[in-house]
Length: 392
Image (cartoon, rainbow, N blue to C red; front, side):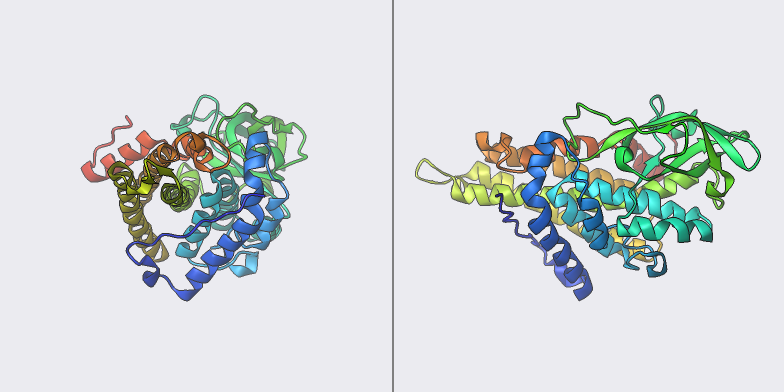
């Protein structure tokens, strides 16, 4: 059985900036990952299967909606705690972190922030516990980076509405009991609806043939004259600010999560370089290998400090969407670069399932695209610093 030997790396002693609670939460999730996810994740990824049994365990560990108030089943924790949890999950696998961050940031968050009290009481405790799994429907077959052009829509039909359209590339979709779906009303305004599995005309075909996020369930959401009760409409938001507010929360978690992937690849490369002997000495003793490792830990350290500062700003409700975009883009680019360099250090062994490197590399090719592509986040920063919108 695979043994997870990961050791955390903290070159600038960032742990001194964390509270004891932060460190305890991080350690508890790390222990859980090492004991229950790391030994099985490679097999699930090789088979392109979703480890569905982990949903309940993630709920029991408090990984679903940890910042949601306790009265609704959440953990009532701060934003740095949430980030550290996502970092530990993605240190193992991006798909597992995706399951958790979709549940917390894209399903539970909009119900809490934009929903009625009745909706909060009905859905949040079941989602927090892992009894129910949720998904988030924004991206469509023809509209990804331009969600405002969506065609999914609903029409008034008395005590309910009729929903039609389709969403694509939806994490958790094949197994989700509920979906937060963004659609246009008859006035062309975007609103959120809570669609439940079992509603007639609602199907979730699974996406097959993925080379990335293979241990994560991905699918479509198809709506064919689905009757949705009006009490399932999120009452407290209209327009793109609704889904974009959710994405800011999720992107924040991704920025921490991708850092976890980088840490895992670096840790594996460092250990392998010390053990692998060529030309009479460990390859860690050669200048080019040391260059790779030194550059990896330098970029990881910069990202750790950036994420701590962003978490502090988010705790103070001062983090801007543009700051979150910068962090998401930086962390994912860093993780991809570290994974590629780590693969080279591992040589031929780096392409095998004996190490996590290639799985991280493939997963990160999805992470660099979803919830705002690499280039879109660059333009968000560009617009923020210049005041000029390059999207139009």
